[in-house]
Length: 264
Image 1 (cartoon, rainbow, N blue to C red):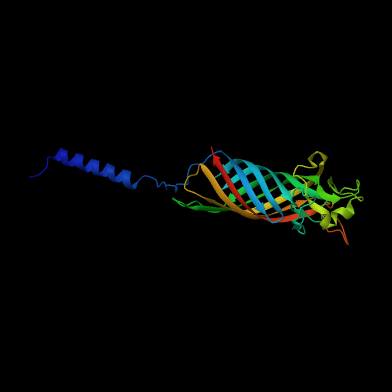
Image 2: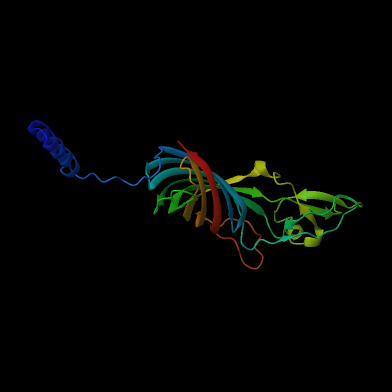
């Protein structure tokens, strides 16, 4: 049975219109999904490095693109001379407190307050699930060295016939006490001498390989492995010079940093 002419024409018009919509529209490629792009991020640093016990930090970042973030870093940590050696004589004096550990020949402790401006650049996208973003981070800025006198407790009988334990800081008069390990009971408290700190300005620079993992863009979980340099205009007197001066004006460290934070 033949279709009526007007039904056949209507069918042809609809078919032509569908063909035109499918084949004549301009091509519009679909960009691969790249996660949610946030504007800001904040994070905390928990760092260990080669010449020092610890370093803590806080970062405020501005996300410019998916691959680039600019940030301001605030950090605080301890710096040690690479020749520092810790000892403990392991004995009691006058039935008093037991001996504790101390650094032989140390006259000052050094802490660093760092402020830096830098960038993170990513080279790859994170996989859909449980992927890793690979990039680098780098920063530079001022550092304030906090030089604190190193106090020790020593065994002496100069105050009378009965030997006593006294607390001293390094000076030319106490030089022989600092260099006589069998007279040292141990280092005084961590905060002893905090009110006598001196401030030494300098510059710091650091760079690291940045590895971020996790399937949620909102959470920042990253591991960094890098190198940092703190430089001052003069030698920092950490150790007591004996034959020659072992002190230096710069401190080069390798570090591993755990970074935890969030984006918004």
